[in-house]
Length: 228
Image 1 (cartoon, rainbow, N blue to C red):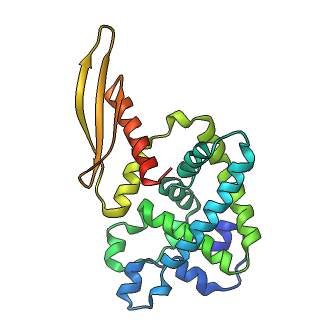
Image 2 (cartoon, rainbow, N blue to C red):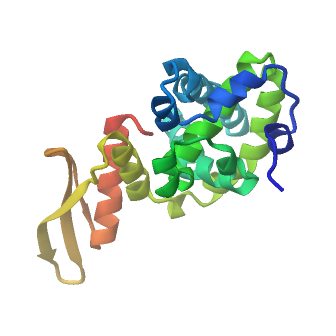
Image 3 (cartoon, rainbow, N blue to C red):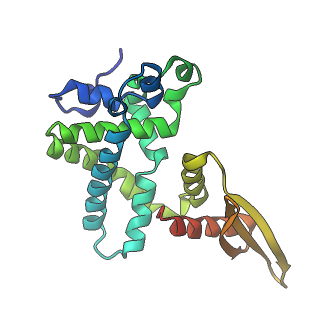
């Protein structure tokens, strides 16, 4: 049985139209020739701000000794499309997204970006529906375990994946990693690698393996692009 928004979020709604818009993909809006404000994009913008503010508040209070850069890194992973998509799919929110017929055939509802956008749009809808305190409480409950996990296992979080998610969200292009040098020292090999995106070199880093150097490059690139 398909869940409702109230089932998923546990918060009563007052203005059903808001949530319909929050679940409407732009493809359906175009297919049905609806006004632009009847798809999720504007509500997503608002929900993104609500989410980041709340998560930032939690991180700020949980880790009073951490510098701004460290707090930003944690938040970037916690509110990434990947995390939001996981939460949305586990709750069954993706099944409620309204898409055009041709997009439905292509599995639009399963795309990370679409699930994440719809999730944020629902947060924006609850905010406009006068449920700010309720949605903040929900965000803190759902996202605190992710915050703790990222903090405790940060070395396992993939900067390359975060960078790729960001660039593909812009224009579906992936960053490119190129080996610039491979120096053989007495007891180890050192790799120098660059990462490029849209023809621009974002970072050049060294590591004792290609993987290490690529991760370092990705991390610097993420900082340069303002992702973390």
